Length: 258
Image 1 (cartoon, rainbow, N blue to C red):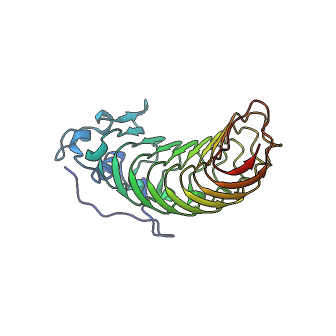
Image 2: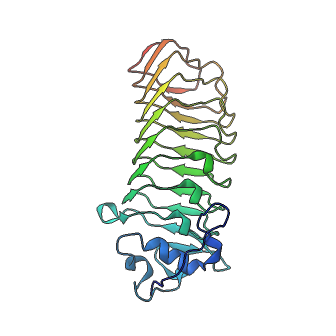
């Protein structure tokens, strides 16, 4: 049965201290925020061992490392208490559901590597400066997130970053991206300002910034050799641009001369 208990907090900053509770209790608290948790744990009043739950993957030591809750669509309602994820969690994939409410990226466990919460109804602003250092892949596309986006302090090992189809605004800086970044997708938002492609990471392969409000001229002469795809269609870009050989570029619905 889901037990009552006192939540322990770190004395310094008042945040929940996940290390004070066993992973079984933490995961029960986490799924208790979801619609019909018994479909995951077997019995709401007497949950099975967490490593036997639907969508849970444990390592050889019996520690929870992965949780999948995918494709529930309109039946996948609930909110996310990321502070309840065990310290051992490495992959959280809960996409194509109907999750709502806000999330605090600072509450993700320190070992987390993959965060896929795309195609939900999540709201609020996002502070990417607080992403754990181990994160390699983030997809928060197709939600209702608002506010500005800071790209200057992303985790150094981040390779995939997608925020497509939200309500994000403000300007972005492309000159201080993390060195491992391979894919950046910020399409279909309300982002604006100029775009500086002259100091992209050498690992960069794919950039999609279409259907925003970016303006001014763009210079594609110093793109990394690894770059194969660029989509900036449907913005307010202007001027003359020379497309490098081998680059698949989508530049239409701007005021560009190619």
